[in-house]
Image (cartoon, rainbow, N blue to C red; front, side, top):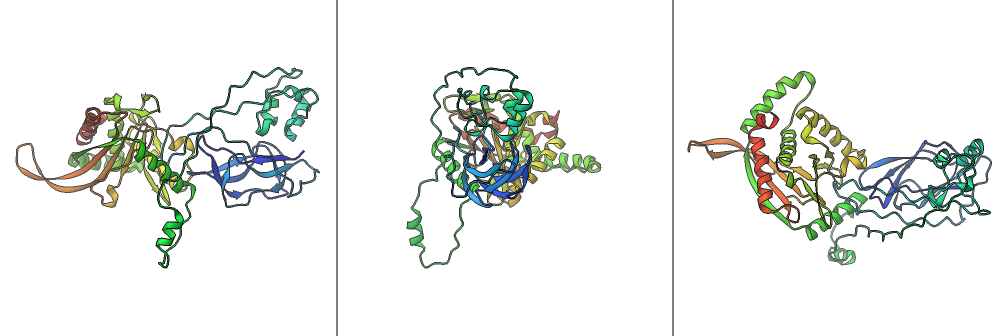
Length: 434
């Protein structure tokens, strides 16, 4: 019996994706666990494993096709010797995707994806829908397929269902399913002039049209949502970096033999992680009708990639050494640039850092990445005249920082306390690491 391969949901927030590449061609043998395709979500390119076995009879969605909805049939798998269904045969209607939060432009809490409820065991006389591999295993184990609740697409019985089944078991009535919650509306494009209006405005002028990919659409929708729905307020402080720069140079000399070179950004990450522990009420996220106060310091760091950005999350940053944070950040940034991060690596966190100092930006205001409570915008360290403690004028390396805060989560005094602690940590780096 022919089996449809459906577009998978590779992350809790995925609603559609791009079929980037087929790794199997029509006529190839497919085994359970084989990587058959590469799927691009809005944030990453991920490998798609087959759950059934057979022959790839027909590819329904060509490589490079964008906007393929989750649970849309993308190929047909047939048993050995089975005729391939005609291309014109109507495909089964795709199942509506499970409720999911709108995709995040950067990081968001790792949503717990609720697995679809298994279908009830089939009634006597009804046709059993099972994969070829599941049928063979059932025969070997002496399991009655009619007694098994299928967990595959459209209630199809798959290998895992048979492996869990007890030989000789009888069908049991499935409990009444609770009514499914209404599906969350997909991220919509921000409002603005209609496309036709803008095109007419620039009629006769030379321009190049850039089609929006999934990442760009998500960034546009999520950050528009952030600015429209999050009551931002901003706190600014300067930090003197001379003690940190001297300490960093000393550490880097000692770490040279290990091939480790710490950056100023590594110290900023550590300072923020420690500050969130010192001011625990600020280590929080907005959860719709409540606030979640996190215990670990899970710090997200913005990484620019072609066409957008990622904010990979350094989990338990307060417990990691500077060298460990540096190595992890380098690895995450490298994989972010090639879109090889898994969803759990860029979702979550309570706080984010956006550093544009390396581009010569003195200061800027960053947009909060929901549901985070705050984001720190870090500028460049520049030489400036300062008034020293003894009242004399001197020169110091000064870095400007702006903390964007969600007023629903963090009030002004609490935000000021958090920023003060970050500054204290950076100006006294040895004490921060003690």
